[in-house]
Each structure stands twice: as structure tokens, then as C-alpha cells.
Image (tube, rainbow, N blue to C red; front, side, top):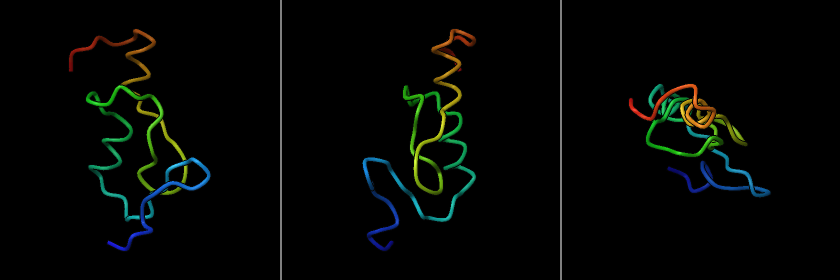
Length: 64
């Protein structure tokens, strides 16, 4: 992997690798990651871990 496919620029993460279903899923719905804002599966910036968001809003319980 070329060294500049992943990293940070101006404090925000970037990932220029081809997105995979697993990476997209792990960023959008990841019970193992407590962060609401996670690095995008592709591109520059942050996206939302909806599991962590719904958990913090107490709309779902902590069990999977």
C-alpha cells in the first residue's frame, strides 16, 4: 500500500483506499467502537457510527 493512502490532513483523517463492504459497515454500525464520529470509509473527513449515536441517545440497549 502506498504510504499516502491513509493519514491525517489539517487534523482530519483521510482514506483513499477502495472502500469495501466490511469497512463501510464497520464505520456506519460498529458496536465495538464507542466513538460517534469515525473516519470515513473513503474520502476525507468523518462519518457517523450510528450504533454509538443511538446508544448515546438511549434509543437502543448496549447488547448486540
